Image (cartoon, rainbow, N blue to C red):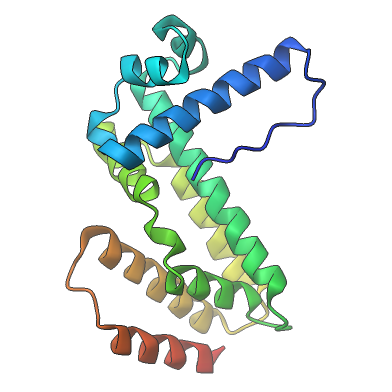
Amino acid sequence: MVSKTMPDKPLGTQAAKSERTRQSILESANEIAQNEGVGNLTLARVAANAGISKGGLLHHFGSKQELIIGLLTETLDQADSDLNRLADANDRTSGAFAQAYLDFVRTSQHTNGTATGVFAAAALEDGDLTPARAMFDRWQHRLVAEDNIDQDIAMLARVVGDGLWLIDLFDLAPPSEAQRQRLFEFIEAQL
């Protein structure tokens, strides 16, 4: 999901205009990816949808891969924000982030069509998943080193969350709702 919030800059500045254009491009790319699939994402279509020239788009994103990485970064930032919101809303003194990680998967927030398509496109285009690796490293550190729970339980929560996400992403023999519920209950009892 692409964030639609604008930075706190004066509206008349060139930097603010540039950021609005960049966000418009990402929103247009997101819309095309969600409605038509990432495979139909072309620079010309995104530019037309954003109401700018292809050259204007290339000023902000030098290639289709840069645009996909921009979408991936926005998707990860939104997931991070959602995880933080879930963790902050939790009244646990320990395991709040692990619980948020599981809740994120339980509530299907991870199955956003753009998110899955962008991950697949970034991996296929040239394998540049650097932003994803950095974010997952940060999440793992938070689970293992900062969540005040046993490291093995923290890793189990992560592996279950990531595993279910991949199962859902590729429709790999997903467990029934009853099986999912029992799995969540088992992991949560360990937290």
